[in-house]
Length: 343
Ligand SMILES: Nc1nc2c(ncn2[C@@H]2O[C@H](COP(=O)(O)OP(=O)(O)O)[C@@H](O)[C@H]2O)c(=O)[nH]1
Ligand SMILES: [Mg+2]
Image 1 (cartoon, rainbow, N blue to C red):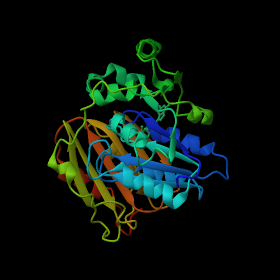
Image 2: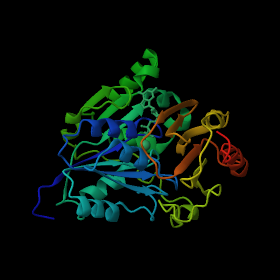
Image 3: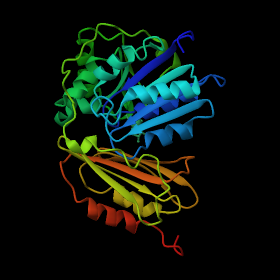
């Protein structure tokens, strides 16, 4: 691999739900048709959703690999070295994009990408951090050291979701970003993660060091358990989902995998996902009979779109509270299933 040209690689960072996957989908849409890309996605929860979304947006020329069940910055079960090296070995991509989890700390990943495994293989370009100005007003986010370091270690910060940002909040956030040291090479604004492809070839700055290098180490034994949900649907029986709970600090998370045969009533899913529980992030893909739907909720905002994905129905929920009655939630989820005769 060493005599090949090094592969341009970018880390696309940002907190939960800011638009990282949207940005990657938008970049893929601009990909020259005959260029091969590889995308490595890391999901905090046990059930990976983003890999499915990106796969559905891509083509044979976009290889997607997903590491679910912990962050590669802190979980020993999610080492980036093996997955990325394997992805590169199998697909020989001409460009690599990496989406860490919204709770992930960029420092260790950047160190690994600069380290002996990858130094001769990849050509590290700018780290691009997506951000939502609304998060800048939310102490549940701003107090998180990882959030601060995601901004701190980025070469380029893109303030996304401009459509739902008021000017006062936006200006305060831009002022904060402009005063950061070392300065950002670019500060941009956009909606729907619309990034220009040329941005990927911006240079990385070698001098950015984390403010909180110890943020987000392994906190509980729970996180070090093997990932057993990982894309393995052979054991999924209809109406018997597999569920895995996890916890990160004071955030409870839970994921479900359903048999591909299970079909849901969309109206009931809408009602359940719009419920008044303290959601930080919810995302899922569901078979609703005549099509499959991608549900996305960030805070109180729920969106839904049709998606060309057909593998299995899956859901991941991250709450802004340390515990939750997941049994009751699962009962409500199962109530959304169609019986064979209903529609
Ligand atoms: N209103 C609004 N929603 C957006 C925008 N960009 C992304 N979203 C939505 O925010 C949610 C999370 O986006 P996603 O790309 O999955 O975020 P990620 O968790 O950072 O990967 C999805 O429902 C997106 O459709 C935007 O500019 N404005
Ligand atoms: Mg994502």
